[in-house]
Image (tube, rainbow, N blue to C red; front, side, top):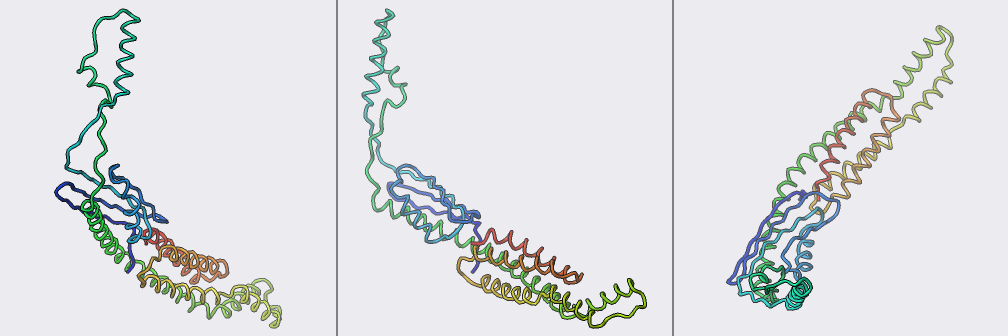
Length: 290
């Protein structure tokens, strides 16, 4: 099933000593682009968790936000080099300027980074399993939302392909009578220019044949039919299709442009313009297809 690149998913887990919440938000992007925001305690899990995301999502920008807390005592140690340097500077200032007084504990306590938190224990197996489970929940919800949006997008895109096929049928129906139309227009134009003079039928046939060959759109019609068949197959599939879809739509647009440049028949030109209009709308929608 076709999947959208827009979605949201959340997962959570907790244990006796920890709690974690994971939010995933995705928007369209040409490739997979993961933006990671997590506490420094989880730095060791960044690579394996990103691999878990890559296994579930092929394209799109993914914003990962992880809230994590551990309920355990925290111990601190003195930043002795900072304290020694500060006290030394105060003594030098006192001696140099003849000041009185001594620094007290309250003064020292206001120093930034006076106390350093000691490194806590490494993440336990229970914590790692909980974080992985929370990510699995978030990915499941995210993929489900992308699938729902993708289904609606799929229906609309298939309808647009149907409108292109209808326009192509109009082109085919009018293309078959182009030679006779060229002959009639050429006869009328010659009659306006030369009046009742005799018309060389052989020369007229050559001119009509030349115009018909120069304006032949048989190959363009055949290629359009092929491209539209491939579009329907892609939209009915379940694999990543975004990049292939963009390429096929470029090809459909190119054939429509060629038909417009070759044909002066109003009904054919109108149908080709209709095709280009639908292609532009499809290309906009394809930007959000995984």
